[in-house]
Image 1: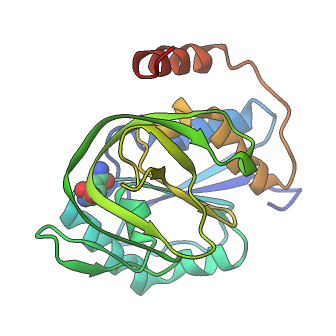
Image 2 (image 1 turned 30 degrees about the vertical axis):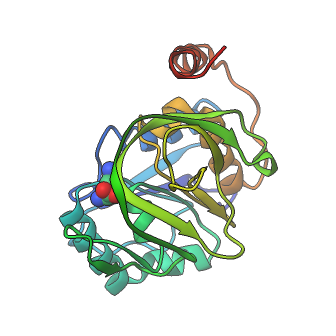
Length: 238
Ligand code: GLN
């Protein structure tokens, strides 16, 4: 982020991918930046439009199999997200959006479909649908509290060398191997809806901190904390 300008958020393909409140992730980032006095500009990029390269944080959500395939084709052809990440932009990719970032994912009949190859992960169809609450301890390297969210997907994901799991799952399926999501550089992939950043403000601040290049001062998170405690105590043993 340039010091004299606003933080630029780019919400990719709201017309194709945004299930289970994923757009809330954009609202949470906007609000948490503004509460720190950081001006924000948000661009909603529909799937017929080019992805701008000058954003600071890119967000993409989850969706059904067919819109997911269409989104992968368009993003690959467009190339704007690749160029933005190469420039050092941060990215939060949720569920279908997460799977798209890899080399391959499972289509509506389970057939392999090409992803956009931004990161070394590969997804396919799992044995059944993973639906329900997900919770797990985040990678200690990230310094954020227990992750909580909601998942609904058929896909399972394998991480390549150098790509680290976002969390170890205590409840739920995530990647399908005891881990959930991934992170590499300033990219975070996750199966968490809910929306993820409303339920994990620590993750929101991690993305904001990457974008502004500094750790952000704490803010009053009493309401976020109440939501987190309610959700975590519903699923984790005390
Ligand atoms: N279609 C993908 C799957 O079922 C992603 C689902 C989603 O984004 N909720 O795995």
